[in-house]
Image: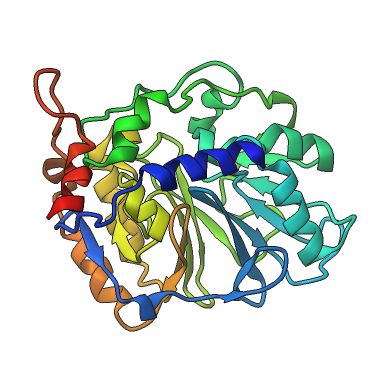
Length: 314
């Protein structure tokens, strides 16, 4: 917990007062934010869905309160150092000895798998991910280098410092079922949404049109430290500095927008819903993100974070 807490404090200290607004993201009114704060630092968005914010990222819990041992599912595993916080939230919601039926990964970036190995071992839990994500989870392949020149913002400028190396959870790792089902979560299905990573997936429940979008669509401008800190609601494509395939990312956004979700809980930012959501999704799906996220950094010019810093004096 100390690890992600210290990182968050550093972000707050360096954050910009006035995050940029542009056609790269679609603003939402604060009334679009949904969810009720409950104990254990959790925010409940449905009777069987809650999430916990861990610094710059969310983890989600699927299952009703008091579900008991193997009666719930964890979605993603947060930043390094967050295992204790995740376990405490799970104990509060499901019971002190309640282990998950499974840990489902939307993808394997460092801020989504930081506590994965510790939690999987503690709970003796299987881990499920798309097969295309497995090389990054079995020690075989590192993610591509971050691009600090796209998107602007302090978080983009810092992105070369973020871990890219693979982790090793081979003994507990399984491919997601090819029929689209989610182990331990009846009624949910996974959808392949590449672009941010090759094996990125989103989770969808048609019965109430709830979308867990991972990083395919997020609800904050992750490139900006100010936006990450304030969590101002908006719809946004995946974090630009870690997205190597914008053509695939745009296709994934259009796929998810086509579902017509009523509620979105993403990997970064607050859960959102309401009448403004679908028009905003249509606007996001219509953006040419590949051209909008052109590099703003070059070795002879100003670094990307100047874009954010200038907002403090305008």
